[in-house]
Each structure stands twice: as structure tokens, then as C-alpha cells.
Image (cartoon, rainbow over all chains, first blue to last red):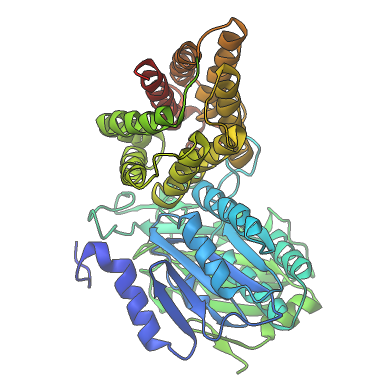
Length: 333
Length: 212
């Protein structure tokens, strides 16, 4: 294992130290209890969005703390959910009296820890709503499993619900917009090479040189199948088909396309993916209306990418375009 | 015959010891169908409970001891098990309120509240290959033992034995909750690590009562 680290046990804290030093105008970091809060929080009278989960997915979620997005992020250990006491501490730090919305990716650990935190927060007199993010079509969404996982679509929920909170919507309304975004989007990823855990030096999974994990999870969980490596266009066609047929998206739908790198994929490859994805959407009669390309929800240095497709309406476009100022996304201000 | 706060303290101490002894085994079970950290996490959580016990005043009620243990587990176990066991002990604490002496009926109420807390949090039912498969037969056995006039120690022994049988009975099941649920039929033949840690904790409760 080769990594630019000092001490495997200090990876999360030292990365947050750097985030704080680089973006002191946007956020501040509390190390004990560990959470990242928007500068100036709490903002009185505005709904505060709080998200979190295991570390190793940067810039998710701490990179999205700031104006127009999250009020706080709670980073756990690598690939390990933060505990409820930490979520509660972040909640107390950013509650401006208008309530707090938890945005939770659908992993059993994240769900249980955030639900327990919500119980504790409500017990402390704070209004809390939770929205579950489950955009990954790779695993079956049925009552026979823990359900679809939450992956890169989290970025879109955080951006759009964050804009709704920033314009002053009530808690119920921000939650309802977050649920609408989640219900209108689907994602799926492909892994070419696993990320490496800093504390053990172990890869999260192993693939042969000519093999890819189609539908890989954000921690390297298995997806639908292991298949031979194909040219990018063929892989993209498989992803687009799986995603677009699932919602399903219909001809004439206006869509936002996010091509997300998993941490170890060059931007050039992400644009090769985007190129074919845009063609494939056009062939299906979908109207590409907004786009985002980059590494936003990663899995350490995993090689690969995910696609997320969101069906837009006028309000979602307006909220997407609204000003945002975070470490990882900034426009309109 | 009844049990008091000393029993709860001893229950937690026995739990810490048995979880430390079984750390590797729980880790192995979890590696087979989960992410492998259950033994480590439970051990870490109960080591933290041990130091919390040292800070508990002598006149604490059983409910207070349970509440402090719950908050410690919530903040130290992590993963899915932290909120589940933490909620279980929080609800158990609520169930016994400010009672200082727990009779058989109170012991059954405590176990039932713990189980209900886990069901509420995890939304799992019997047969889904989770810790509920150990807790629910344990509560049923405790209830029957209480109805038959057993002592608190006897009630806890019945619960522990039923809990162990329940954990063993998860082996042929397909998981419907948690990470193992994605494995489908591949989870068959593996015992659920959460059901196993529950059985260990229930045995710790019975052992603590025997010595009380």
C-alpha cells in the first residue's frame, strides 16, 4: 500500500484539519465531538440540513457543507457510520429553531445511527425529519433485503434540498423536496479496481485484470455481476439502460446527468463516459438539461464511475441553479 | 425473591467478559455474512461500559445503570449494533422506571422492552436472521417461566437457553435485514452474529443472577 498519509489512525482527523485550514471562510471543524459545521451556524429561522456517514467518500459529505447545501456533516471512521451522540452534537450545533433535516444514505448502520440520533434530538426538544436516500438500482429494492443503497445521488439531494432550506422553506417542505428528488433519480456504478483501506492496507474487493464489478457499491459491495472489461461506450450503455429503465424515464423527460468518479478515475475518462451517456440519453428521447462531472461521492481510490439520472421539473431546475458555496461545489456566488 | 442494581452491574460485567472471550468468534461469524467488525465493536463498547460502571453511584437504581450503559453503548459500539443494543437498554431502563427491586414480572417487562426497542429500531421480525431471532424466543421463555412461578434467576436462565437455541436456529435462514440480506441464499448455513451476541448477553444476565 502506498498512500500520502502519516498515521492510518489519524487519516480522518488530519483530512478534516486540512479541510478546515483550506476553507475557513466556509466551515469549521469540531474534532471532539467530530463534526463539520457551516460557518455562522446556527442560522436562525432556517432549516438545517445534516448528513453524514462513513469517511472515505470525500468530498461527500463534509465538502458539501456551506451556503445553499449542508449545515453540518458528521464523518465517521472510514466506511463506518458515525454514532448517534456525534450526530446529536452536530444537530445541536446547527439547529436554528426551524428544525433539522437528516439526509441519510440507505445503509443499515447509517439508518440506525441517524434514527437513534433523531430520537435523542426530539427528546432534547429539537424538531427533526429524516429522508432516506436510495438511488442505487444495482441491488434489488424489495422487502426481502435492506433495500436499494444510497450512492452519488446524495449529492443532488443535498444540493437541491439545501437550496430549498436556504430560500427559507419550512422543514416539512424541505423534506418533501428531498423525497421528491430521491424518488425522481436513479444511479448505478461500475468498479474497475477496489479502494484500499488505510488501516489494514487491504483492498475492499479483488477483481481480475480483465474483470469489472457491474453495479458496485460505495464500499466495494458486490453489484449485479462481474463481467469482462469492455470499451467505455459498452459499459455506459449497460449503465444507462439499467438506470433509465428502472424509474422509468420517458421520452421528453428533462434530466440532470451526474457522471461521478469513484476516486481513482481521471477526469478525461469521466468525460469519455459522459460523451456516450449523453448520446444514449438523446437516443432515448431524454432532454439533457443540467450536468455535473467530477469525483463527488468516492470510495477511497476506487477506479470506476457511477451515473446518476434525475428527472427535473421547473422547481428542481431553479433550486439546482441557486447559489451554492461549499468546498466541493460553488456557483452563483 | 428479587434482583437489584447490583445484578444489572454484574450483568454488564459478565457481558463484557463473555464478549471479550468471544470477540474472535463473533468476528468470524460476521466476516462470513457481514463486514467482520461485530466482535471488535461489541468488545470495545462493553470495555467502555466497564469504565462507566466505575463512575456509577452506589445508590443508583437498576434503571439508571441500564440508562448509563445504553448511552455508553450508543456512543462506542458504532455500526448497526450500537443503536440496536443501546436502544434495547434504553427501553429496558424505561420499563423498570425507578424500581429498586426487580421481581419476576419486572424482569420479564425489562426483557420485553429491550426486544421491542430492537424491533422498533431495526424493523426486523422473527425469521429474518437478526438478533430478534434470539431475543423473541428468550422473551417468550421468560414469560412462560414467570407464569410458572420461577424465580428471577430461573426466568433469566430460561431466557438465555431459549436465546441460544434461537441464535442457533438462524443458521438455515436467508437474511432479510442488514448487510447479509444482499447475499440471498449465500447467507444460508451461517449463524447470525447479532443473534449470537444476544445469546451471550442473555447468558451473562442469567449468570449474574445466579451469583446475586
